[in-house]
Length: 225
Image (tube, rainbow, N blue to C red; front, side, top):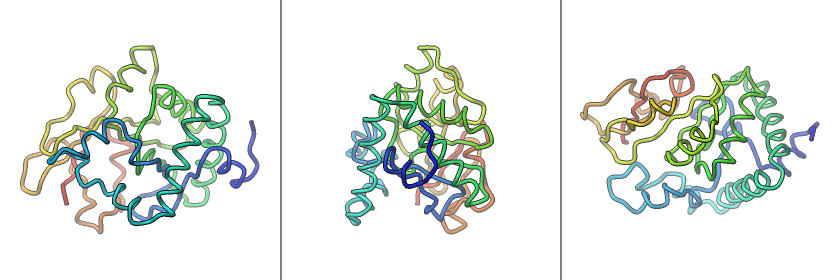
């Protein structure tokens, strides 16, 4: 299905946003309360999901809750029933966002996470159809990534998947190298960390000029703030 307007693409597949002022390009937010691994981690003190900012925003802002839950519903249902339609709508919106912002970067899930292997398959197809865009997919759904890879799924060169360690202070996930993906961790101020430290806490919690999350194969460690 070909789309000619943002309105039609959003109505079908959900809203790709350029409204996250902390990072470049575009983002897609899903329902943080629909996370699988994240839902369990949110209840565990010391996990990277305890005190989840996205859940706080959804609780405080009914309009955000409605929008992200709607994105989730559309994504899950359309990927199950007509994945090519969802893919086309994402490709159209992400391309338009890059033109609007002048930034060829897209983040999957500034809220929420992978729902299924089928969703990861669809995202990989979106990346292949937008080779000029660098895609970053942070996820705690290691089992979904493993199932995708075990089934022969390949990762486009412009899609940077980062498996997130589950507890603050944990080392990078060891299986990431075998799966051919990157990693991210969270450390507290003063704790040792591996790889590249995200500079956002020292620059208004914004990416600024940094693009490591999209481009670097090394572990990115986020300082707990």
